[in-house]
Length: 367
Ligand SMILES: Nc1ncnc2c1ncn2[C@@H]1O[C@H](COP(=O)(O)OP(=O)(O)O)[C@@H](O)[C@H]1O
Ligand SMILES: [Mg+2]
Image (cartoon, rainbow, N blue to C red; front, side, top):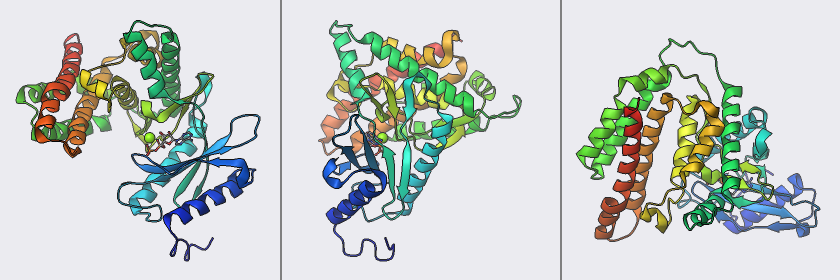
């Protein structure tokens, strides 16, 4: 394809069609009549198309992903610099993960098959299964109504995830000097400060913010942080970026940027996404949280029988503040009456995060 004439005068639909034809020709040993092409999906930070090969003994297919910084602004031929950066970061992460995330424990990242620069499209092997967060919510809701049938399967999957993540961190750890100042200590403090300032602008009260600042300034935390190694971490590690298949194997995608950081940053980020299992649903406003055994399962898988060290706490605190701010920002963007938004903030969002902050504060006091 000639990049100079590419896209000239083509409609969005034509471009999608050309992209799909190109992928079927180059990545699938099939003719288009043997491929089921899904719709163009619009996600948070991407357009995606799922392809499935027909008449195969085993389910097989491909996912096409076009990263987009802002899905509301553009159609697929407007590729911005930021979109290209996102694609290149994701390609880099998936390439590294292919070697550094061994798929022991039935947990693996989807394989990157290629990249098409004309479309800024990533081509990955398709994972078939159920959205892991939906699957887990089903088990958790049943549990809340007294049906404990599938809880062991949920616990097992999360424990395997924890073990797998620990193995990835161990594989990619970098030798460091235990007395050298940890590069993250200061950055974390600055981040927490910026979240606190932004939360104050959203009207969160001084009592809660004071508590947040006091915890963040706790000298023992900085001390605990110093002793942590650095390893590869993944900014896209999220419960919502996982599919579980019929065998119970987990398939991860959307790793985001890979960056050397404290391993506990990943651990805390994932636990926060699990804690917010009901995020974005009405039930979130009923302050529903997943069963404690699910969070414990990730912890046991990750840390083994020794349990969670104190070094994770500052990371949990950061996640609590980050998610709190995200909840306010998301609500502010909703076209709802101001009085409704005010009620949701005061009656649901702030109490949820204050209670999380309270739990963290108790853990700090226990030493
Ligand atoms: N390889 C894949 N296999 C199966 N589903 C996928 C695959 N890649 C993407 N998806 C689907 O597309 C959705 C969006 O992809 P994702 O990479 O998470 O994009 P975003 O950066 O917009 O969150 C996922 O939630 C998942 O449902
Ligand atoms: Mg995603």
